[in-house]
Amino acid sequence: MAGVAVAGVCADSIRTRTKVSVTTIRKVFLIASCTGIAVFILVPGYLTCEYKYGVIACLCLCTIFEAIGVTGGFVPNIIDIAPRYSSIIFGISNTLATIPGIVAPIAVGEITKTGTNEEWRLVFFITAGISLFAAVLYGIFADSELAPWAQGKEDPIEMEVQVSNKHVQQGLATVNESCEL
Image (cartoon, rainbow, N blue to C red; front, side, top):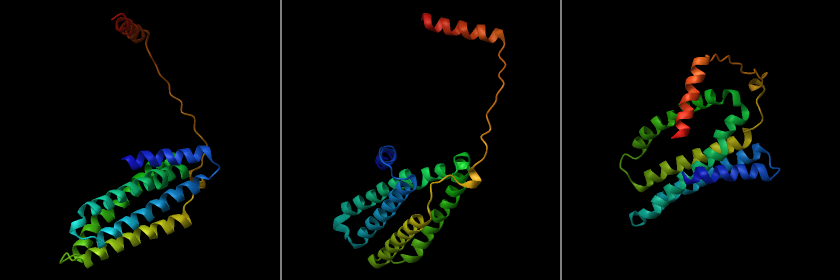
């Protein structure tokens, strides 16, 4: 959670204190995130059991780098490109993002049948490759400009509220009683 807080504050500070475009900020945060994940996921494949705390540290750093990408990169980018539809887009993308979480354990089980270091190294290399591929794709195609299809006339929200005098008097009496205590 520390990565989320730090990345969010940093991204907002850069956005308000510099003339760097929002698209550039999103790209830098996500590319840094994916690159950090790729680096720190590869290290455990070369560590032995004597370095178990090093493995734990690397996996924790992967989580911190993931938070950087989430908070400064793709999640706020959804709001940037389509604020009116961000909840729908996030729901669909998050649903699709669960597929790797279902497929990955099956694939890892097939790759690591005997559990050797070489098999696990292959898993880590595949993971690093996917992370770097995502960084390249995002770096090329990401944009934070409001999408044309997300633009529309702003409909003012109008709401009619009917309050009876009886309810107003009861509410005021309750407030007055609370204040006197």
